[in-house]
Amino acid sequence: MISFLIKDFLALFAVIDPIGLAPLFISIAGHHSLEEQNRIAGRSVLVAASIILGFLLVGNLLLGYLNISIEAFQVAGGVLLFKLALNMVFDDPNRPAEAAEEKGTEQPEDVSVFPLAIPLIAGPGTLTSIIILENEASAYSFGMVMILGGALVVLLMAYVLMCLSGRLAHFLGQTGINVVTRLLGVLLSAMAVQYIANGVVVLLKTTPIGL
Image 1 (cartoon, rainbow, N blue to C red):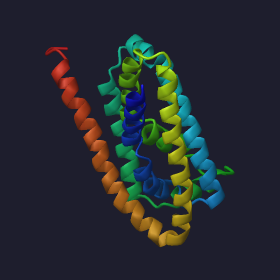
Image 2 (cartoon, one colour; image 1 turned 135 degrees about the vertical axis):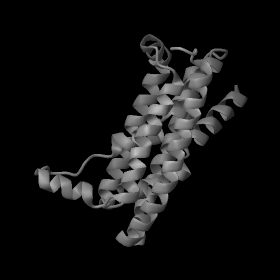
Image 3 (tube, rainbow, N blue to C red; image 1 turned 45 degrees about the vertical axis):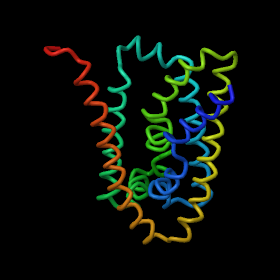
Image 4 (cartoon, rainbow, N blue to C red; image 1 turned 135 degrees about the horizontal axis):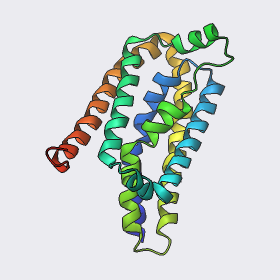
């Protein structure tokens, strides 16, 4: 049981990557105030936790019912992530706020659901790991509880690091945030391409010719 707990934590820590999430959070939400950054971090973690819980309970049934493979889900997540990466590299970081003002809305676009909660936190890698761990957890009496416990610990770490990244963004200033945004946009685009490539390779191997 202890070995499964350790494996559960390490697997989810690797795919959610709270440490790597912190600089991405700066790029996405760094133009908000520190208070708003904390709220965005909290909402993104809550949404991600809900997605993970829901997927743990009905993920296998839902994907099976819709005849959707994890690989197809991974390709879709990669496409969305690549679109975000292009915006990070080429768009003005202040554009979401300006666009909101032009539309007469009170607040800029909420980024807590997309791209933070999904696909960055509860992305294809996380959901795939949840399915794998769920199958292994069937051998334990409280397997589902252990998976949820490990996920909550990792999500709490992600929340703390995202909140601390807000202070770092304040230290960097707008110019520093712009530089980090462009650099991480390039890295994020490479990550998205890797998501797509991995999914496509498996789909090509498993899809019968002629379908």
